[in-house]
Length: 319
Length: 145
Image (cartoon, rainbow over all chains, first blue to last red):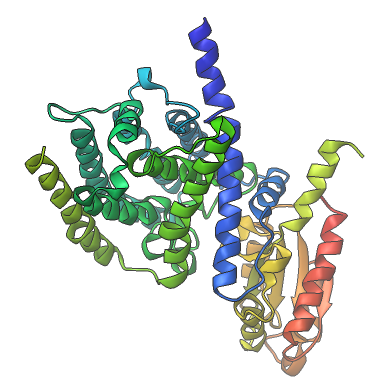
């Protein structure tokens, strides 16, 4: 019973649910503001993503006649719920250790592609040609960025396992780094960290790798036919995903804590998420243009995968 | 005013724009792109965003005289925009036909087929005028939410 209560608290309030939603929308607001400032524009207010959600929830929902209606409505809910569960598994170092009984890293590996799958469902259910192209591109992109992620997670698991075996629990990975220093400052883990940085823009669907949405050519692909509350659901999903991916990055590479108790560590966690987003999302998307599908696929197979394998080899050698 | 109403009224700070080219010569479209892309005018400061899909739009900006070939398509795209929405006619063409007035392919004006809320005259209008038109459209949109 108590277990049930604590799980629902973690799912709905902290670190999943309410906390992750607010943090994700706030991070998105900062992302847009900083992007605008880098382009020397005034930019939207920082609370803009909140206004967008409030606006969308009051709009009319239009469902195309030719769409598969049940699937069309189900896709955003599916993606949103998947990310809610994923956000619950993210440890906040110094505040909460993560739901270690629920599987952690392997669970996340299964939960992280859910938004991509929700996009594919949405694109194919909406019966729009743009949605169909978006779906096929999303699939290619997913195959490309899942490989480096898998190898990075494997490397971290082997490293955190110490002299013998591997450790797939995020709580144990964080604990190991508290004792032996953060992996982000470890020379043999540096290639894996760079591979993870390359993975982030792909999974978040931001500019160099935003093939499925590609606003100027595909008109947001799978999201084209969505309007009103269902579109708001997709926005909330990507806000949650931002927190999940940044939180995962912090847990894998920089889980250090600062003295000063839970509140200070919470602020420290938010700051680290923000810095990670600044480096891997905001600056990248401001400074680059979109790659073609084949270029993206080759990029992921050439650089992040190789870097991740280098790290894996180094870890195995110096175990 | 309750808290719910106060939150709901914030919706007015997120107007998404959608452009329809109803046979325009592209002059007004260039000016529209100017308001979006050039740091000096930056329409995003009002919370606006140009979106690619009519389903995401709140404020629709229509340029060009409505030629007979494009009339049905404009109507169809217009109907795909979810309520509440505001229409802004940009340039002199949707108002009176402009330099195309009297042509065999411009038999009707825009407000014969669509209720127009704001007119931004000019050939093409200055970016400042377009921004003012968007701001006026926001005031109208406020009453419809």
